[in-house]
Image 1: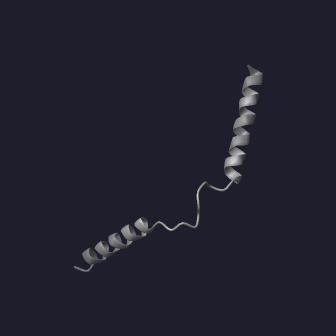
Image 2: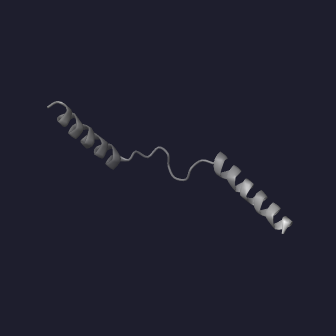
Image 3: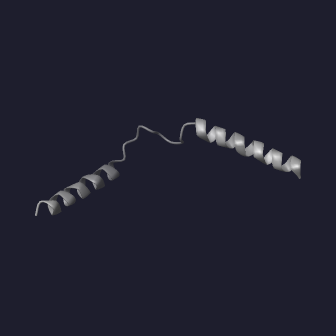
Length: 52
């Protein structure tokens, strides 16, 4: 039982190190145009309501 717990701790520690030091999956330089458009629309709507 102790061997199992030690093995699991080593596996989890290794997985944690790999997750911490590796780059996230996917392309980081892709621009999300839908998110930009939504933020611009929300900012415009917020600007219209604050100038009343």
